[in-house]
Image (cartoon, rainbow, N blue to C red; front, side, top):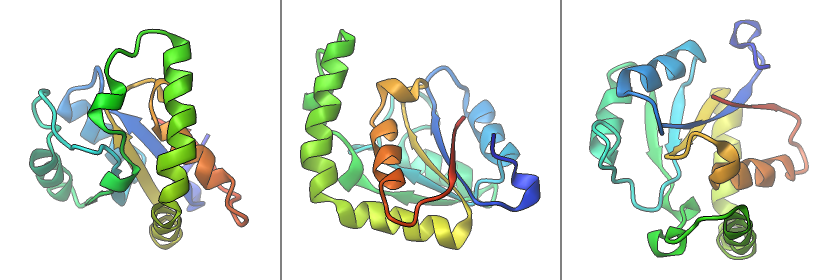
Length: 154
């Protein structure tokens, strides 16, 4: 469990599924998040407060920097018709072999940002990190040579 009180860096992931904007923002505040990185390819949402401009404004109002990293997102057409665990496993395997492999610079950027700010969170829709590409991004981070930090899914 990350403890932001002891000043040890901690990397976070957060999904907004099932959360109100207020609850979501409170989670960020409680975990001392300094930077929120939106890893959605297309940062639009039918859920109030979670489209790019709205979310950027909301987090900015509480002193959190917003960064959009669309290169780490998954195209919406690839996410259609996901029904089974196997569908997700296939999607994530493809994501590892294409998007992550082709965008290692974005993983490095995320790592450098984390080293600088200490409390960084990546965000997408799904509440369950196992059903979201955030899990694949964190796996890629842990494979970096110097990675020795805790990851917390909030």
